[in-house]
Length: 509
Image (cartoon, rainbow, N blue to C red; front, top):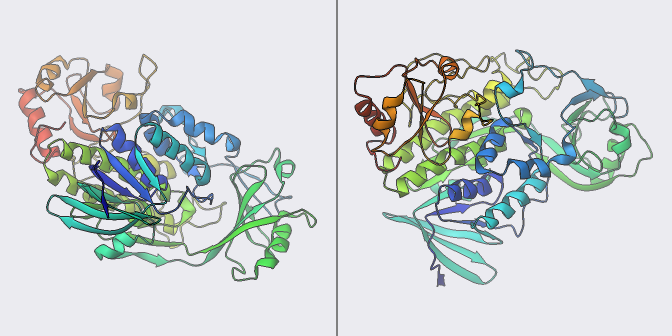
């Protein structure tokens, strides 16, 4: 057995979208990591495709949004839904949202995209390696123990076995999560919600869909009901169905031809993947020095396209807290990861579970009459009421996007005079955003130290501040504290807020 001489601060187990994102977020924070993934390479399956606007905002903060959009270029025009008795007869469904389609530029500086997982993972892996992350594919975690001062992990590749020490470990090792099972962390939720199968196949459908490009196409016939998903918009496709899922492999081409509506088209079935949609949420996201993230923490049906996106937000929330603690903040700050992310994970998983697979009604009707959150609110409008925030009791709703500077919500996007977004003011540390009469805050923030940005009256009006008020914003772009007016002693007020948010420490802002 060999000992790893370059001890990381954080060991990441799992090299999917969540694990690779964790490596990038921690690298941005200056934290040394080792990522191990037992597979020899990134996923060969398309799996997740929808990269929502919140995830793209996080990629923008990393400076990689353009590279992700480049990987998504083949499906740039494939944002629509369609439906019909066959793919050949399908027509587009008008895109609607409960509150109407917004002017996207007023709520976010980015654009969502479709990028199949087998295209996105290699991009994230390449960038992570280029930025100095220690990424090891074909290496498996075989054992671990938790000690008072860290994690001792045994990792192996071929006949080589290494022993590695780290301060903390992130389990991004998937829905079956051997780490979660080893820790004995139970899961609850709605459980299994049925059975389905994905048929991943190759067929030249580019001309058939030209002018009717789609993200998803619902097939409404009794012989081959299901839905097509575009993977590259030309040759790679997935057909998902809950009908006849146990049929022999050699019968699937004829089913696909019936769903497509072209009885002679050449089809090459690449893989058949049975799966069970379900809702399973870990009861605890933290076990001492180990943190669950992504599918290891929460499994949800794909009907809201939220699984991978929620997992990436998990590690974005966790990365700055790990960095702060490794720089000297009170370790109790890490408890806020579970406090904040578990309720959000549960809510999004539950909302995903009550949505129907019917593209015509999925944003209007739930399976059991549970009220549906507005889809945009689900992406941008979640709120932390406890954790590393100072809740002010202000109201908000998930019936529509309602983020106006409330503590625990994502900082509202506003375009600034220099062409940047207000979100671009937040990098790897907390920042203080103040109104046009907030000069005294700059002196108050000097000893922390804390970066201060002064914004205009139009901005303060949109976030509930008077000209002398301020927002303290965390590195994950979440408002931690709001003080509407200038207090008598701004330095004392700010120090008290930082003490509360960082669990009684001021040294790691």
